[in-house]
Image (cartoon, rainbow, N blue to C red; front, side, top):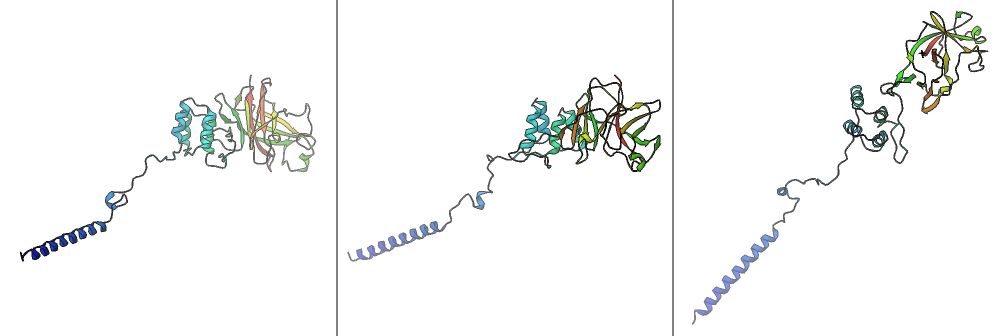
Length: 290
């Protein structure tokens, strides 16, 4: 009976020890940091595949749209309003043309990223009608495929009284001015009703050009462009200017149509101030044979 108190004490000691051990384990578990998706063991963060990526339109996209039969206006608005990256090197332009992409659409692709590109909330800009690969000041005609082709460029000599002189001399200023071209014919033959485009220097109007019919001779062509000392000052049978009304279609660009009832012969478009210090200049020429 005397051993009961000792046994009780031993039991109480063991119970207390177990309680203390359990508390230590629980505390250790509480101190263990919780794992999360940001732990290194959880692996790298993955991008959300549902996030939309900006896709730039390119040459291939435009070719597919053109082959699908979409209207040019839709293609041009897409080019102007959507982000895009276009290759417009010579070989790329040839590939676009061969794929059936129109001149207007290619021009819009060339204008993309330049000052011609559309601004937000602005009306889409109509691309230049100028032929692809041709951006020089000059005069062009539209062929049957709708392409702008340069007119023939010839040298013209300005003379008065049958003598070639400088147009700055006093003797010519007060007399009629005549232009002289070597050869009886222009190398370029055009049909009646053809559309002509003038790509004028900055600040120059289409009405400053002269549309002329030449006086034909066996080995040369001539025309009169000045009467009384002032261009466009007079008209009459002694003048070789033909009335025309160039319409402005874009900055520095003007078009007019050669009349369908025009007489066959030799013609030219004379730029303003084309005569140089030595009485020579250039003129754009063509023949009408039918």
